[in-house]
Length: 467
Ligand SMILES: *Cc1c(COP(=O)(O)O)cnc(C)c1O
Image (cartoon, rainbow, N blue to C red):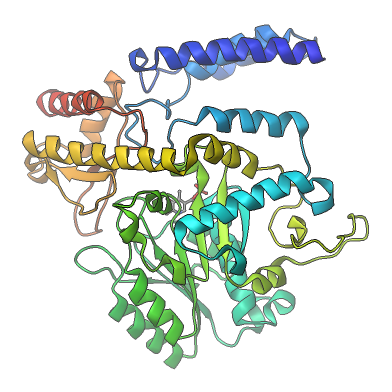
């Protein structure tokens, strides 16, 4: 058994190092094996034991030729950066020792490492660690779900027992057209229903219009609804835009609404002195979502939830169960009583490892490098005749071309052509429902260099000429 572990790990280490060494020569987007499902069925009947090291080599082959390589420096995609080596090792330790974090007493030292990490990251955002509770989550979606449940418990003390039916009037959650669609699923999971989501119109610069928001709250109150929460987005997934955090905080305070800031990837901008002002006002939130598996270069899955009303979170989740170990009065509450999960793997150990190994200064370098590469991308697109259509300092660039605008070629056709060449990965999005799709390229890797951006421009020009 322990021999298996060493042989498996050694073999895995060999393959991973070799792949990292040649990654720039690898396609970002390999051509997947034709009828892989059938081939797998022939290959594995699971009847007899197999050699672990051989299995590793075989599976690595399947992975390397069968995934979009999000760790590739020419993956201009969706905030999945290359992973920090210390975080990979942290995840391995989590798997090997398998600490159970449901109850504090089962893994106190690991929980303390997690708490230390969360408190340090809270300080990066300007939140006061002594005044908040914070937990790791499976991702941004779970953190957003946690926020909605806490907001409901805070606004309607009868809700944890009576459910949404006892709330006086339909509960209303305000968000924008550019808010993350996890809230659609959350509306269903919580029993609110999607009609409880009120989309606030955007200003012409594509951020939430605070006046329109205030007006909608008044109208909803007049109609007998029950406004309880507003979600600001700091770093919209499609555009990088940041909602007006101060103005929304003021209105939320006036109207007594829970103020949540979804900063799933944007929060990492706080590591950069140059970008930090974009997040001013986030410290006024009742709760914040921040994903470590986005811009912090930690393997999936790793989200974080920060909240300045711990009692509301506890009211949403609290249970006591006879068979669980009794708490012994530490300051850290048992995670199973304040979060959605029960059995809990340590999500924070890999985040701790990455933060300690990279240091705050290492993250500052990562983020500033990527922001600088975003500027390079904007410049080169402009030089090559493309038109950037979003305004942000963050390295997500939405762009179009007069040939797209005139209907000469579609973004879908361009992406298909670029995809067939497999040298870069990028996507498309729609900025406002009234106009057509645009292309979207995001710098997510601290390893992306100007020559990688040149390859992207070459691919775009080639697609324009030949698609
Ligand atoms: C990615 C993202 C989410 C969802 O987070 P997951 O980690 O994918 O669950 C929520 N909000 C925003 C703004 C995001 O970018």
